[in-house]
Length: 251
Image 1 (cartoon, one colour):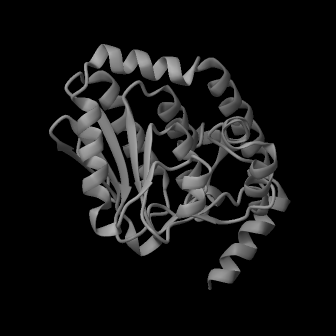
Image 2: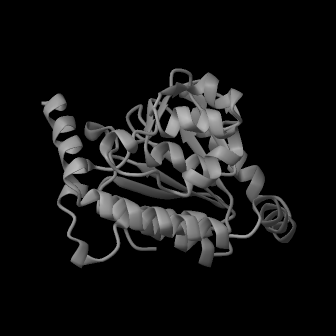
């Protein structure tokens, strides 16, 4: 496996591949190289039979603040697909079980990727938010399809259209998280659960997972539709104004 680029740490714990977003000074906001490293880890897991599960986590007390908005603003459509969408597609296609250990903040993709994880554990005080509409873009990761299915249309509208924040307790109540685990034990607990998955009879586990999830075609088609609308919105003045307002608020 190639060395991970700066800001993503990738290591083996037995049969588990651990992927840690490691850019704490930016609350682990995801840049193009970080997405590429995470995408590579998903692809490595799929091609390596010795890897039985993956664990995603964040360093420094945050999971991820979502996409690095400066990275988005500098994106040139001529350069091809946004790295974020390559990561989302790899996550949706991943046949290896995925576990998430989430603490601090999980914004944007940090929240929508939960919909593609098999097990999600959150620390007390974790805050989730889906601010896509507020930023002048549209939801991604097939969340416009999967979130209403998971939690109902009314609640999904609160989260995706109003962009309301919600905490770990609400994530549990909505069925988006499996358990709330103290931050000091969170990553270790997630790895232990991933090891349990990795030690199950592999063919049976993967077959059960496919049956639970259903076909990938509909999900991948929605990801493509969202990506097309997202990319168009990203070039709009509405989105750029929203991004500028965000940066002004941070300064």
